[in-house]
Amino acid sequence: MIRLFVPRDTTAVSLGADEVARAFSKAADEQGIDIHLVRNGSRGLFWLETLIEVDAGDGQRIAYGPVMPEDVPSLIEGGLLEGGAGHALYLGPTEDIPYLKNQQRLTFARAGITDPLSIDDYRAHGGFAGLTAALAKTAQQIVDEVKTSGLRGRGGAAFPAGIKWQTVLDASAHVPNSRYSGQKVIVCNADEGDSGTFADRLVMEADPYLLIEGMIIAGLAVGAETGYIYLRSEYPLAHLMLDDAIAHAKAEGYLGNNILNSGKAFHLEVRLGAGAYICGEETSLLDSLEGKRGQVRVKPPLPAHKGAFGQPTVVNNVLTLAAVPYIMAEGGQAYADYGMGRSRGTLAFQLAGNIERGGLVELAFGITLRELLFDYGGGTASGRPMRAVQVGGPLGAYMPENQWDTPLDYEAFTEVGAVVGHGGIVVFDDTVDMLEQARFAMEFCAVESCGKCTPCRVGSTRGVEVIDRIRLNENRDANLILLHDLCDTLEDGSLCAMGGMTPNPVRSALHYFPDDFARTTASPTTEER
Image 1 (cartoon, rainbow, N blue to C red):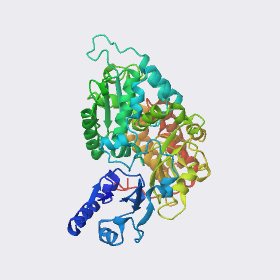
Image 2 (cartoon, rainbow, N blue to C red; image 1 turned 90 degrees about the vertical axis):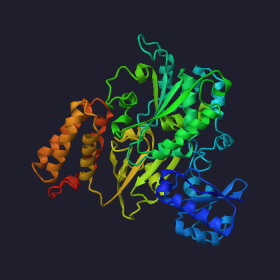
Image 3 (tube, rainbow, N blue to C red; image 1 turned 30 degrees about the horizontal axis):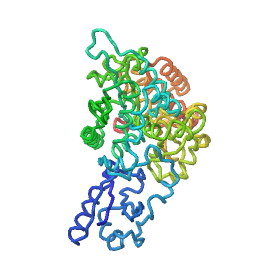
Image 4 (cartoon, rainbow, N blue to C red; image 1 turned 135 degrees about the horizontal axis):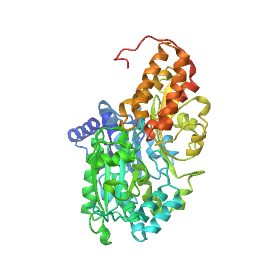
């Protein structure tokens, strides 16, 4: 029997993976070939999808890609099923592809290797070792291990996870006159809405048990027996995978009232978001989770004291929770040995936009942006010179070429006025109009604002209008001053980072690409906007 791996994640499927799988199944039936088709997760090498792998024995796989359905007959004739090199799409051993070989995969060690829904596969590749270790520790010992690791929130804020967990562990769960009194809650923020990001989705689609394991450990650490995965509605495949994985985990005793006969309980379910970017902010997320309109809450109280349903709550991003099983299995120091400064461990950088080799690159903090863009990304897809790079989502600064040697480290990026955020990296070539990008930042804020605070709700709308007047050369100098003033108001007066960080892309565009604000253009039509 020949084991053939065809990925089933969203990106691969969008590029024809299902059709490729059907083509192989049809060819096998017609030619009497004994093929065992495994729908694995993606390796994250999206520029090679659909990436087909053949089991060559001794743990080695031979890769071919990017494969289209019409390539299947010639691949079979060219010896694919024997791992032969006689085809133009032959890539050699998967692990030797430089893009993958040079990574430091801790969180994504199983991505693309296992059948995502096979719990036996997960266990065979080290799954649940972290949970086993955690069950042998006290809650405080688990929290201390996370503190030792130096793990910081991977959703963008980079707050130390161990400190957040300690706060929830120490918080009283007794709330008078509340039917939720006595409970603590774990909430996974899977509302991945930043431009150019897909790492959360890849965890959920390629290795869902990893997230489940991380959430169970978090529950053990703080005394929570209830968990919710708040998932963006635009991830239907991730939703299906998570629901199936949770059902399997329950059946195997990893979820429920008696985890692995330990006497400890943890219950987990998926809740879908409603398409609002603002619900990536933790307090808006909690409102939405409770069935309310997602709006930012005033802090204090912090969610760690009064979060979901008024109870102490850990809110962590998918990547944060997915890092925990490794930390528990290998020890906090093993994780802390990666990285630089206060940025410990690894981060899954996501290359997108006008980039030749888009995909996921997990590396220790400290690599420079330039190395990522060219050594891994291969420059622009258009072949034109790269002009600007936005890191950290739509609220991140646009970085010019003279900042690309900055090491990817939270503090180093802060020093140059940029953010690492969730690790999304969007590339633009020299045809980009940076005034348009600044306008997009203001318009994005205007559209996605929850509307609770005036600086964000009104200021962003006025910002779009001011940029349009600058483009039309209407009182340009006065409007440039007004735009700077609006940015100050948004930054200083907004209730959350949505309005507070919108000035980042606008100011960086103004500062580093001033020529784009000096050109006069015609008034934009509604369609152009």
